[in-house]
Image (cartoon, rainbow, N blue to C red; front, top):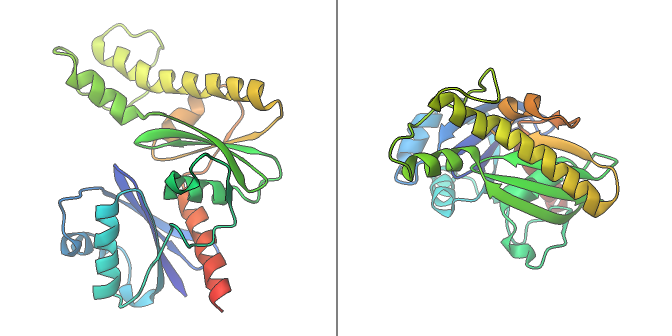
Length: 252
């Protein structure tokens, strides 16, 4: 039994293939809302054997892409996908002022760390950077800051002379030419933000916790952080798989 998993973000769509227990393969497509369902299917159909897929599950923060994936599920697979949202059992308690406004990606992140014994601070380095504090299967609080790509676009879009840059770690924190200066800001700067917010959260919660980095840029930022942490690039997909299995078991 193979499960096709979709983690739809504002910048990328991550596709996972699972046997129901672990993530076997992952693929990434750019999020392009102007593309039709047929164009997305042309992109993805060479990635896996469609006859091996028995179920589909979707975590999405882009409703227009969700509709296209539902169309693919119906047209290509003749399936009704599980979509993380109201009515789906997650096993998670969201202790925020308005639990319904918490995004599917945050829900899946939090479910993805359910096996940790200690509280966990998840740092999801996506289009926006999300800090999610989870304890005893409860989301107790969240911090949202602009992500690396948003920061670069803001710099380039509001300044006449700053160039667009590739996200790479420069050899030194203090740059001596424009590109290195900007690269330092969006790599060492984000790492310093992560370290600083970990300290402030520790002061507030007054307990020790694990830190898990995930998201597309976690591989670049994790080595620059001073606090001990682990990296799990597939955390949303793991949480989505766990939510799928929970709901599938309830249906049986």
